[in-house]
Length: 207
Ligand SMILES: Cc1cc2nc3c(=O)[nH]c(=O)nc-3n(C[C@H](O)[C@H](O)[C@H](O)COP(=O)(O)O)c2cc1C
Image (cartoon, rainbow, N blue to C red):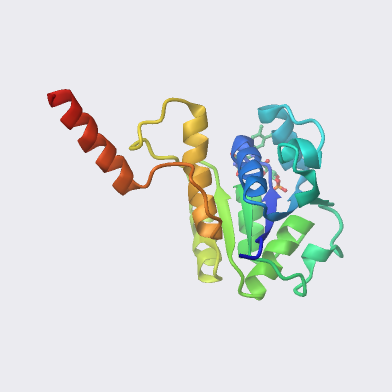
């Protein structure tokens, strides 16, 4: 199978650990990764993950050759063009600011421009939004983005797989992201496997 080519945008919402883990997982799956981060996205990477500067090797667990870092201010960069063929773009975490701009067609930086181009070319766009509670402004922006073809993925991990810590919660969401990007992974058991393991544990406890 051809390696997938994925664009990852990082913006200024809380949740940088999701982006960090996703980059590592995409690199493990040998994807060609194109990264673009807004200024606030870089600040949150620093605040929440201690990543002071974007370094391809550090972000991919030593697989830096797979990662290209694009400048947020370069509106003429390759990922800003429809001729840049790719298998999907995800913005994670996605701020309300960026989601609203993408929903209404504003392109002030290369994160937003690449997302707009992804929509116009009818490619997959995932907005992993984080904010709570939501105002009607954001709800309407989610509706507009969905009607335009984007997938809104709220960063709200489930607890039904019995997470034992933050890593499990992050992986819960990253597994959903990889599913939507069509990237194979074995991060978590499927629900079927989880139920089977529970049945087995009950059987073992009964003796
Ligand atoms: C520490 C910090 C945390 C923030 N968390 C969020 C958040 O979770 N969701 C959100 O929509 N905005 C959040 N913001 C506000 C955005 O960063 C702000 O709207 C910014 O303009 C987003 O710019 P960008 O979309 O270009 O990254 C946060 C800002 C800071 C400084």
